[in-house]
Length: 251
Image (cartoon, rainbow, N blue to C red):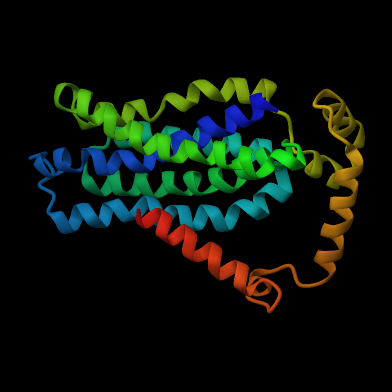
């Protein structure tokens, strides 16, 4: 369990770093004479990653249902890490902005996927705590970006800060080899033996996931859509969570 929470923590930390680093290097970008960015242009580029996250967060649910949470998380981490390399070698602000947008798609997929895995592999009495610990990685990532910029930006330049953002690629082989797939996904694909082996390894009761699958099946027959989020049953929770996330990102 702690291994999975740690992997998810570092994925979220990388997510926070990759979003936070733009603000940390912004003064250097504005002073970068070959590009001659205006504050308005720099602000627009800064929004591209968040705009990409919007699409990533929308698409990740459908893709996860097709290939599993483990693969989606690995793909997203690889995706945004490679775009950080692309940003580091970008030759124009247009290319830089495009790579930030593309990377944002990967960033948007990390948060819901890592969150789902962390919750799934946590005991019921520790789920809220483990989720909070795991998601704190986002704040650590943004603070890390600022701290590293203080010590390294003047000496190595803004491009080097984006090279650092590619470091999560070192985590990918570990994820491929050791990170387990979602038990819920395996059961939905009739891969019960694999699910039972994982439950035995992590001392989880597979009957819980069987019951969850039945609940999900019942919900699927009802109203499982974006429209359902604004139904009478879920409207209050949807609005509260929406406001919480907006204020969190505003902060």
